[in-house]
Image (cartoon, rainbow, N blue to C red; front, side, top):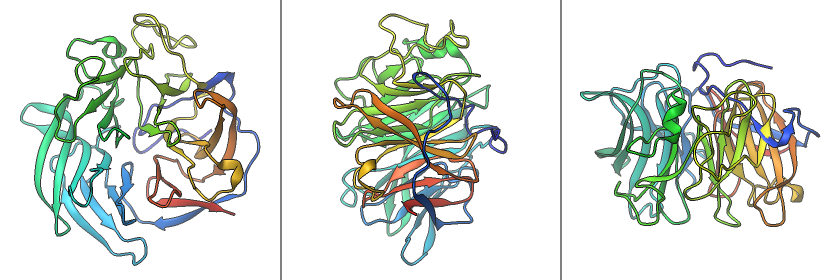
Length: 358
């Protein structure tokens, strides 16, 4: 199994599941990776505009960039200043306002050196004529002293709210602290940064998480799924519920990694007994990989570079089958995203690829 390097592991990752399952995927599928953008600087965070243009972040430099995948035209839109990319920090997550192009806002999650100290921040960047013309800070959360377990995935849900996953910064007790501590949580905010109605605790949607850079909404049900990295065991695939305690916290040790905080404690839908460094997650909804993929959930892995898939059950609340091997990529897989045409894309440390039939 490959081990993490460079990004101090952009995740201290692991995986878990149909209880006690091994990380060995079952059957390889006829899928290949088609590179659509190369020579990139650690594109952990990427997404797409409705017109198909690629939007991505350079994790280390803080540059937000747009690329036309048809012409190859690539330009810098805005540089996030004072980015700290030590360990697992950096420019990590990006999302587009759901009303684009009427509302020309790009949202980013980045670790920054500020006058208040090191912070994980969600910023809203106004884009005009292809350039960032204004920045508003929506969230600012302490980062450090640990350089790992930052989280950083952000995306808009079907409710047009922005969901933000924040790691516990290597302090398990943070995950169970519901006072004013936003570490180890999934947050839900309005596009202007205010707190919407319906959250569980202030800005908190769910808690008891360790370290995640993967979230996706099931297009068939609108339910949120998340990947969470365990310690030396038990990477998790979770179906997130409002107010849910996913039970990581100060009482945890391998193999009992879901035993902290109040009951009910929500256990994973799947756990990998052997850690794979689980990363991005995406659903096949017109992904053009064949009828057997319809509705499947795909996950990436940092440690072994594999993309795996799972069949959801009839209620789409759990899993019927998996993991099945989709692709054995020679490099570590960071993020998975769905393009406007339904096709699934993924990134490694230097490029972005599209999954296609072999």
